[in-house]
Amino acid sequence: MEGVECFVIFVYGITNVFLEHLSEWGGRWVAQDFEHVAISLLFIGGGLCGMMIETKAFRTTDDSRVNEQKASLQPGYSLNPIPAIIVLVLSTILGGHHQDTTEATMMHQWIGKLLAAAAAARSVTYFLIYISPPTSTTPSRVPSELGTSFFLMSGGVMLMASNKDTVEAMIANGLNAMLVATVDMGLIAALMAWGMGLFVVRGWAEEREERYRMRARKGGLV
Image (cartoon, rainbow, N blue to C red; front, side, top):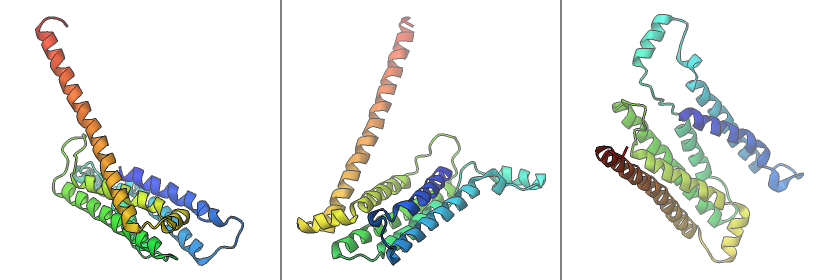
């Protein structure tokens, strides 16, 4: 999974280099544009590092004895810290990102807090998996990943809402950053509840279908 996350980070970094200047297309580059490009370079470099860590060539050597020892010690899961590190660094950058208005500054502070919480939750996941490695290929359902998902989605929506036009509309209508953050987290919580509810209904339906099949077999219908 960490390999997929690193690939997404890498691709986003590449596209972000060309997208950062769209609002001033054809105009001069300012210091803030170069700051955004530097963040893109962080994504590109971090994503590449993470993907290389996930490759077999990085994990093994030409020494067969060492390979055998590594194979016996390899738990079958990845503790690649690169995605969590990138999210943590990004939270610090965005939390202190210079803005022209108070509302935009507060929104970026919220983004920084949410992303930092996501990185912390992922670190808890690594710790739990390290002390209790999974014994099967099925999802281990580490509870801390619920927090990671919530904080990442909330931070992402907050980041999308912090664009210049939206902030100006907020100020014009007398809205504040706290309202946006509260609505954001409430909607994400409701969305997660909806998604989890679908899985609950699916599990209930599968269990009911299995009971029906068992009764049908006993009754000689199948």
